Amino acid sequence: MQSRNEYFYQLFSELQKQCKDKVAGHLGHSEESNEQLLNDLDTLLKQFGQKTDYVDLGGDILQRIISHYPDITPLMHRDLLWFCGGQCLHYLGDEELERYQLIEERYFQAEAANYREIRAQAFGMH
Image (cartoon, rainbow, N blue to C red; front, side, top):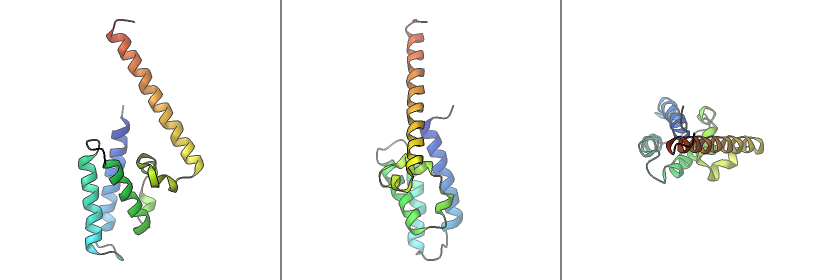
């Protein structure tokens, strides 16, 4: 079973690979700007799940891609916008937001149910 964080880490890893292919020598942006985006993606993946500000960094990266690299934007998985939240949510429609909220509720309900079952087994309640 893949955890929520593992899932989003995988999506950011895929985005990083796509950006490496598309960003190097990207016309319309300085080499420094292109390198900064790639460096930020590297930093994000190194910090993923370990530091509290990695979600904010992810959101900054996504917004930068949307505003400055419109040719890369369609390659970006929309789940990442939900994961980062904040300003990124403005790029999702109402129906998408409702679906993501439903996914989150189901995920955390399933996690809570599993916790109770494990707890019951640990305390010999089954």
